[in-house]
Image (cartoon, rainbow, N blue to C red):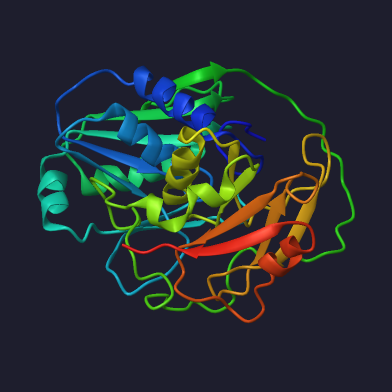
Length: 323
């Protein structure tokens, strides 16, 4: 469980920003047209944060998604070890990004943790079909456990290690649904492009979503939802920069047992109308004065009850982001 990505465990925005900068500093400086790619769910904010920290022209960022829309699919790939293995990439919709894509000579993949490198290898096989002239593929991560060297890419990590484990079989009584039984077109649910269709600059005024005077001297949690992490992180960063104690975290479809660093868990149905089991870890045990839940979805399913569960303990406010 990463303590610096703001996914399964709360993190201060300043800690997340430092991680973005540290990862960006691993990447060799270059002016060549570059595509930055992040992976859903956990690395959507991480990928965009590294892209922003690297701050180079002639580049853009996009992340994989597990949500289906009417936009043209670029390619798909499998994260074979995952609870939700299917990843979708959509073609960029902006003409400027399409022109950059035609000139791309370097592709940088960003993920929080590399266990074997197989996921990166799978996606690069697909990318090589689309970008036959790209010679440089870099895989950037916080932690790389893989001891295998791949010909397809170079791995750059802040930390490297190795692990072994003993297989221990347990009885699982709850059936977790991590992928939809019926594929739905979510155009009306998630109409905005926060990076799912490629982005160069995110023009969003986070100040309009919160009244700083009302939360002074309070302990705040900004809560992203699923893949929607980077814009809420910017809101958390804005609040922290005002001298307010603020933490960031996001909901997830990742099923994790309460053990070790995970001390509490809330279960609920997702806010994307897919009837997926979602979870929120290590929040209900905290002492926040106010929790802001942030959505990219324009509406919420009737069965979505995360806010109701949190209101049993916290002052909760819901924010619907838009561009």
